Length: 147
Image 1 (cartoon, rainbow, N blue to C red):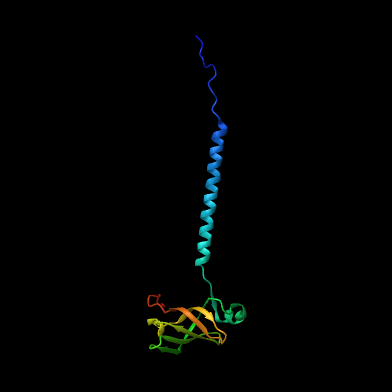
Image 2 (tube, rainbow, N blue to C red):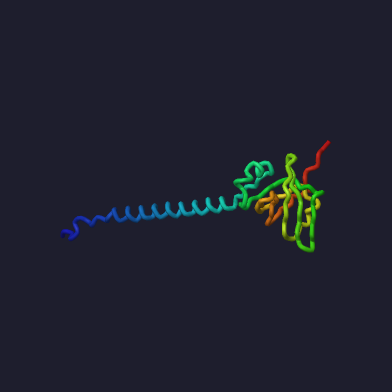
């Protein structure tokens, strides 16, 4: 007796190829979106700060932009009006002085700070109007020098 099906039906390999190409294209698109989102988040979290000489060299281009400035704190220039919450101080570097005005509560470490990072805008009078300040203090946990 002969079999009704002499030749078994051939499965379509084009459908399998179509599904695998769809999967590969979808994976590539998904990977591209993930890389794009990661790149943008890293770029937005990366903040450059200017030194006072860099700020002076680019004063015209940076006027009115929100930037960060780093420099040594002149402790003798600190004026803290606690009633009106106005803090005024100078940042110095290479014989250049940048007056800074900050409206808000002064950090506790302001008197012992070594350097300051101020974020804000440079006004037309050359005074840096800070929105936030970060005082960097000398660490008591630094390695001591062995003699």
